[in-house]
Image (cartoon, rainbow, N blue to C red):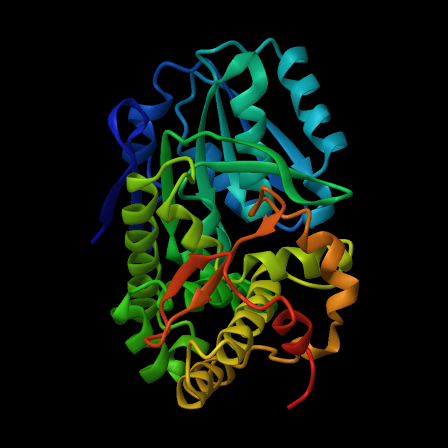
Length: 358
């Protein structure tokens, strides 16, 4: 049975439909009926059967085009963004037409930003195929591309018209991409969702087996958490900032690695561990809480070796982060109950200390 979650307010409100197979003609129909032209954006790693399945769910009287990006975060670039804009112009898309993002977070981010800026805004639909995109990047309206100085520094807040989440996509998801999505789910367990924390602590074996019931619950609970936050604060003027837990250091690690050889979710896990370490050094959490979190991450078979990175290598990327305001770095720290909160009051000496061995 499908689980429908409403996100946003007023005219920007949209539905997130979650089920084993959410990609149906009926779910798509209301959002594509007024569009003559539809551009499906995907990447080279998406199985062709998924594209074929999507096309089959779109009515025959539409002009359907596809645009395939090279797989990987490096495609979330200014060059690929301009290529998409040129393609829309060449195909004579107008404001009644539609884009569909079929893929992971990279595909959704660049498609959303293209939709936000072409003709000052055309509609788009998110159909996320990776766990990370399903639980995080497809919901909330953040769209962006990367530049050399950092990740997601150019973008817009622009909501999709619809998000369709089929958990059946997870069955064929490579293990490294599956673990990447778990990184974002760990984040939600630290944002006040006790159900997620309980599932992670008590169902690690079922999670590793991609148990469909457990995974649908994790996806739904993650989106409920994010929906509640972004509906209150659509453009990150307040509480929404806590969704950046683990991301300041995670984004810095990705930029340092030039977006190669590391998934976003893995970088977020490193970032969460670094923040947990800083929170411990600040006296905000005790050793038992620090160990509890570390044990949960280990039980999910996630890489925990964040100390292979050096603070000095990451510092320039950290200070270019969007969360720097008035020259001061804001961090999402952890309180005594392992819940995230925003602050710029901390001992800066604890940042490099967090990277050193005990």
